[in-house]
Image (cartoon, rainbow, N blue to C red; front, side):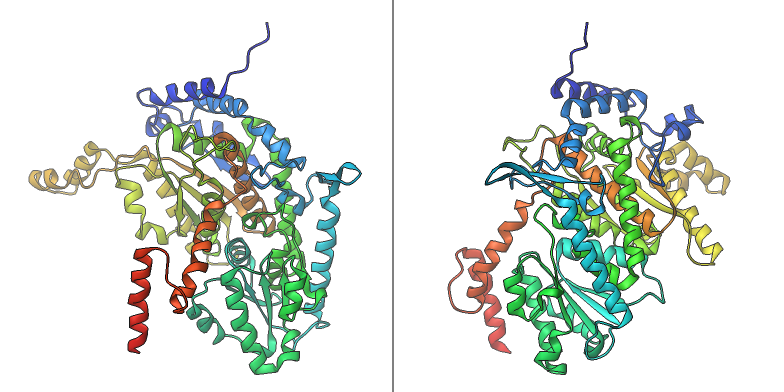
Length: 552
């Protein structure tokens, strides 16, 4: 007799029952009972290694989570996304960031055409955009395209996905001797521009304005500031040679003074936080070189192939998502820390904050019903070892466990071997300390060996005890190459897609971003004294601010 597939509720109940058992969250006991646990909990893909041994997962719980994934149709959702179906159902759009990398070889987006159902070849458009980006990048680098002088700096003006991803990648991959210095201007606070302006020569600065609609308030305010700076130094006609746009609004870009052949577009089937592979990544190519950008895409393609082809029990994005479901929903851990033990990845936590929290911070399902389980956790982080002298106190001894992603790079690109050994030792020690902790008996024995008297031991024992059983995963990169970084970022993108399916939410819209934008447009006239603010508390604050302005 054929086995009847479990319903999502039945599958979740199986996970919940396992999590409710005594010792379900224990990690230290599992490590001590199974010396070979590392080898059984290690998975590899696209050049990366994922270590799950310092979680409380075992064969039974992982099997139950994968059964839950099947019941929720997680891999079916993956396949629908790869086929170009409108998995972003609230906006009736596909989510084809994989097409930007070219895996599979061809993506076609189903759509209605006047003559009946048809399809749009996404790959053809992607390749055309990449060709235009490559030609522009090479022309800038060889001096065929220049401003008042040959360009030495590029400023990317954008916000959210038009800033965080490219800024993170450029910081990670740029090395001295690469073609241009890159700078990123996102915050509408003009203090950011004033600090940046002091480092730039307008005669040698290329400016990219990154806004799909060319209407984003913060981006356009900054663009006007920078354009005025160029015009003051160079004149209006010459300033135009220093401008390019990443946008689809050709009418607006032309009105701003940007030539059509300096505009590089991307489609609405690319969400901002998934867009660094598109024209939004032009600053990466300009700063680091086209070969670096191509290698970044190739690394992401390798992870795409792994995601699409690997069996479920070896599939890194699916396993990382299942681990998050275990931590957030089965064990009730509402936050996660990301600790890259490589200074070049300092902006990775910020990129993942947007990628994950904007995607997964949802309280209703794709059908508009209340979610069955808690969704996206809070994500925060800092590079190691900085984090150890910051928030890791809470992670080690706080009341609620905070799972950690350790991102570790085995080989550095410098010759300071001792520094790198110290860095790696700290990463491994933090993971071990979180998992194993230190019992009160161990603390007492340690203090007694150090010669402390009994009263002092009694006074301090509780403070020096570490509960342990605090989970972490480790993602190991051989080196921080463009390929490895592309695979790493794509791993997290696919994890987000899997979690959207696990929780039945749409990970590709972001309605929560819109309300504040709408309200800001209404409050601006109040600050200008042209209209009253609608909200009483806001109106009162506006008056306080205007009163302070009046005193100056």
